[in-house]
Length: 269
Ligand SMILES: NC(=O)c1ccc[n+]([C@@H]2O[C@H](COP(=O)([O-])OP(=O)(O)OC[C@H]3O[C@@H](n4cnc5c(N)ncnc54)[C@H](O)[C@@H]3O)[C@@H](O)[C@H]2O)c1
Image 1 (cartoon, rainbow, N blue to C red):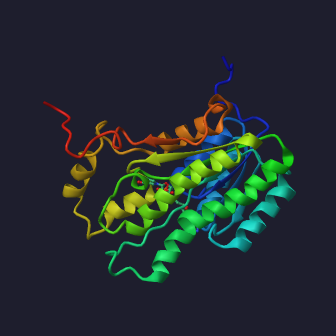
Image 2: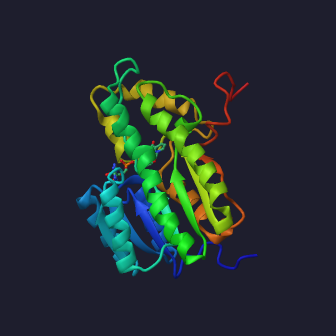
Image 3: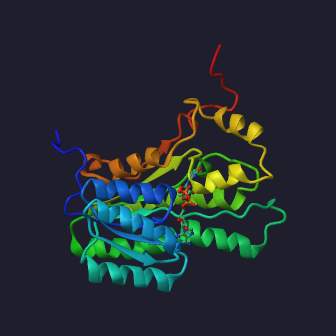
C-alpha cells in the first residue's frame, strides 16, 4: 500500500485554465500536495490570485499568459517551463468555451473558435508536454477535463461544445494507447454541472429562469446536488497521482450518477 496516497513532492505540473473554477482548484490541490506549478490562462488578473494562493502554500509557481488555441502561445509557455522548471510530470488540460446557437445558425467562424480551444488547444499542449515527457523517459500523467456532454447531448445550443467534448474523450483514449509505451498515462474527467464562475454567470443572467433551470439540472443528477470545483479537482489529483499508476485511457464521470441514469429511469418508487 502506498504510504502517502497522494504525494506530488518534486513533481512539476502545467495547469491550463488555472485562473478560475476547476483549473484553479486543481492547481491549488496539486500545490497543496507538494507540486510546483506553471499556471496558464488568458485571464491575467485571475492568474495572479492563483499565484498568490500557491505562494502562500510555499510552492514554486510561475504564471504564463497563454491562449491554448494559439500555437505560438503554447510554444512560449513550454519554453518558460523549460527555463523555470526543467521538466514536466503532469499536464492538466482544462479550458473550454462555448458558442450557443442553433446548429442551423452557427457560423463556421464560431464552430472553429470553439473547437480551436476545446480540442485543438488540448492537442497543442499535450503534444508539447508529451514530447518533453518522452525525451526525459520518466513517464508522466495527462488529465483532460471533458464533460458529461462528451457522452450525452445537452441541447440548448451546446452543439459545438459537446462535439468538442466527444472529441476530448476519444483524444484521451488514443493518446493513452499511443503513449503507454512511454509510461505516460492519459485520462479524462466528465463532470456534470459544476458551480464555477462560468455557471454562476449563467445562473445570474436575467434571461435565465433559475426556478426552472436548477430543478431541471438536479433531476438528472441522482445525488441531487451540483458539483463544486473541488469534486473535480480531487478526481484530477487522483488520476495524476501514483495511486492511479495502473489507470490510463479512462473517462471518469464526476457527475453524481448523471451518465449512469437513463432519462426514462426513476429515482423513487
Ligand atoms: N462548470 C461546469 O458546469 C462544467 C461541467 C462540465 C465540464 N466542465 C469543464 O471544466 C473545464 C473548466 O470549466 P470551469 O467551469 O472551471 O470554467 P471557468 O470559466 O471557471 O474556467 C475556465 C478558465 O479557462 C480560461 N480560458 C478560456 N479560454 C482559454 C484559452 N483559450 N486559453 C487559456 N485559458 C482559457 C478562462 O479564462 C478561465 O479562467 C472546461 O473544460 C469545462 O468544459 C465544466
